[in-house]
Structures are given as C-alpha cells and as structure tokens.
View 1 (cartoon, rainbow, N blue to C red):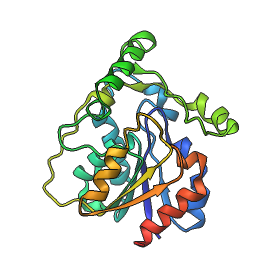
View 2 (tube, rainbow, N blue to C red):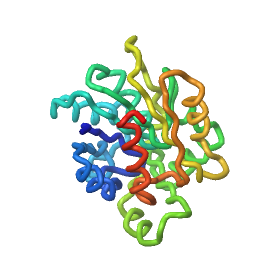
View 3 (spheres, helix red, strand yellow):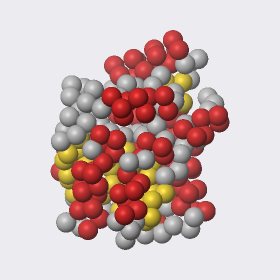
View 4 (cartoon, helix red, strand yellow):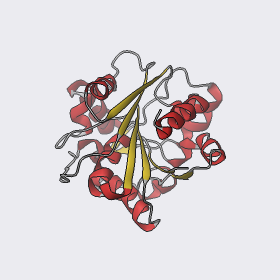
Length: 237
C-alpha cells in the first residue's frame, strides 16, 4: 500500500479531493493532502508575498514533519509546479511522481512562462481589475462539471496569489528524478496548455503516459476512473 501526498491545484485546496479520500482509504493507502498557504482552510493567511516557493515549502514540510518516506507524490494542475519543487528538495523521500493534467516545469520556468503571453496578460488584467493587483480571480469550473459539484466547489475556491504564477522554479538537485507518470485529460478543449506536457511524457525516457476521457478535474468529475488509473500506475502496470 502506498503513502500518497497531494500537491493540489490553483484556487483549490485539500477539500477538492473529498471524493478521492474514501477510495484511497478503501484501497489501504495513506493519503496526505496539505492545503497551501492562502487557500482553502488557510485562506485567512493570504497575502501578496506568497509565491511558488511558499507552496513548495508547505508540501515539503508535510513530508518532513510527518516523517514520510517512499512517497507517491501526486500533483494536479498548478500542483505539478509544486510537486517538481518538492522532488528537487526531498528526492530521497519520493518513490514516484504522478502529474494529473499538470504543469511540468524545467529549471527557470514559471507557470506564466508555460501558459504563454496571451493567457498571462488575461490573468494579470483580472488581478488588476478585481484582485488588488496580486490576487488572480478564480477560474471557472470545466463545463462538464455536474451542477451539484459546481455548486459545492465554486464557493470554496479562492483567488490565487499572483506570485505563485510569476515565480520561476529553481532546481538545484543533480539526482536523477524518480519514476514519473503523466495523466492527460483529453477534454480540455481549445487552448489546452497541458498537451505539451503529455507529448513530453510520451517522448522522454523515465515516464509512463496515461489518458482519461475527462476534463481537467477528474478527482471531482470522475473519481472512480481516476482511482483506476492511479491504481495501475502504483502497481507498475
């Protein structure tokens, strides 16, 4: 059975994986889902100084203080930025990394670098208009989200500190990465920024590649199907 640690997505938090918890628990896995500073249950700590390094430290501290080893680190969406930073800091504790429709940065890249100038400009304009310049307004849920799920999730989502998207990741470890898996959600539609990482995972050594007929939040829209893919990855099949 695995020890799974989550690096969740932007605007989100541990609460968003509520449907996954009983599935992981029933399979005998330990599941740790730290919430980033400034989001979810820690939204009261939001401030303009929070950056990517803050969220990397949030997850790395969970591994350290819970004394977790042989970890399967799961990064969803923006959480791929965080997971990549955690692996760089704590390679000896990580057995595998699973990127769920997530960003996979190289050294010196920010999330804004990866989404491109048009998307960056749109998000900055939103922050300037309604986020005091430092809070990125919440992205809408994917259109195929069930109404009841949207009603549950939408009021819990919080603005994202802009520095988390501005800050470039700094990778210093020379150790080889752990085995990596990429789960690509095929229903992302026009402007899909995650296909580039899907293609990279298919082309580079050290990856396994998986696809789901799902939109960007399979932990909400199709948790059973996501659980099946995670089970195959952790079994090495």
